Structures are given as structure tokens and as C-alpha cells.
Length: 272
Image 1 (cartoon, helix red, strand yellow):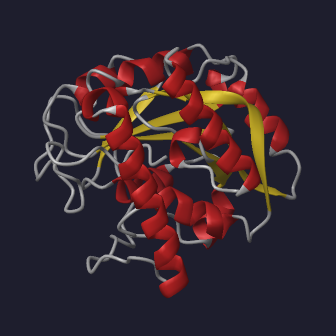
Image 2 (spheres, rainbow, N blue to C red; image 1 turned 180 degrees about the vertical axis):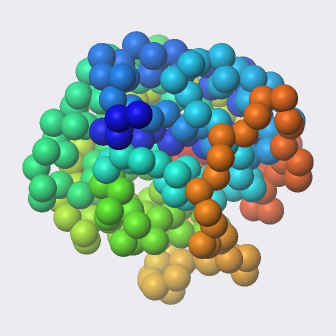
């Protein structure tokens, strides 16, 4: 088997109804043949694993739940020199996105990058959120994980991957990777589902995400070296996982210790 040029890592937990969108959009990519696509399931209780296995180019592995842990687990078994992290509720509208990543990463000074953000839907409020997020990304240098972060595998390993922080593990990583080399924002978007805004309400979700972001920034000022680190340490030194069997369901708690009670607070999947 030829070594892939890019490894796509998608953490998922009970995403049977949403993961089809991102996998279908990957199937439409012009350069999907050079990609290794890894779905890291966090012990889902629904049909996430079966849905992922419906796409022949997808590898499925399982890890303990928790987005940072799942993404780090996927990175450990990735075989490509470039890692591309996508959320399970994302969609890649442009079929040339893999080409764009490979082209920009041909510059050895580029360490990492991301795409523009787009909240799926024609609602005026969603367009305002989209504009604010892209303004924050370009002016403040703070893109989030739902913008399709990509990074050189070597740089990711040198930085120790995603840190076990209580919130904004993607932003924490972006701020660290910017010190390792040039960070670029590509012009095409990665679309994100508006399900959080639809479920919890637009204003409530916006306020929650702003509070989460401000709390993270405050934590950096108070403890810049280790913001909001959990008492629980991430797994380390774990051997590369073998693809799981669809006939053997995973065991374990399907919820992360830091996963919010969905009945009380919006998801932190898209902290904007």
C-alpha cells in the first residue's frame, strides 16, 4: 500500500445522523485517492461505526471519548506527513480542498493552516456569526477546529498534539503551532452544521460560546503554560491501534468526563 499524502482524522461520538455528510463530501474530493481517512469513534452507542464502514475508503478505530484524546489517537496511527482534522458535522463544499492543502504545504515554512468558516444555512443570524468568526480568525489569529485545521505530522508530534485542557483544545493548539512556523488561512470554507444554534437557541448558544472563549483567554493570562488542565492525564505511549471490527461493538462509557450535559448547556463542538 502506498503511503498517503494526507491523513484525515474525524473524531465522532454518536454521530450516525451527521457523519454521512462529511464522508460524502470527502468522497467527492478530487484527490481522495491520496488520503487516509480515519474515523475515531469514542465508544458510540448509536450506528456511527456502521455508517462509517459504509464508505470503503474509511478506517474506523475506537478510543476513549474526549475530542482531544480521539484526535491524538488518530494522529498516532496516521501514516501521512500531513494531518487534517475535521468535525463529524462538517461538510467540505469544494472538491479541490485536498489539493489546496497539499499545494500550500509544499512551502516548507508553512507549519499549519485552516479554512474559512461557514455556518450552514441562509439565516441572517448565521451569516453574521460566519462573518464574526472569519473576522476573528483573520484579525486575531484564532481559528477553531471546525475550520478544518491541518498541520505537518512532524510539527504535531513535536508539540505533543492536543493538550488535555477543559475547553478550546483546538484554539490552544493553534496558539502553540503558530510558534512553530507560518500559519495560513485558505480561501474556501469548511461548512459547519447549525444544529447547536437550532437546538439551544441562537442567543443562548452565542453567549455560551463567547463565555467559553473569554474563560479560555483568561486562563491563559492566569496560567499561560497550562490553561485549565484536567487532573486526568492523556494516554501516552499507546501502540498504534488496529482497525476495529464492525461486528464487535466497543465497550466503555460513551461520555467523556468533560462532556457537557446536553440538556443544560450547548455543545462545545463549535465554540464561536
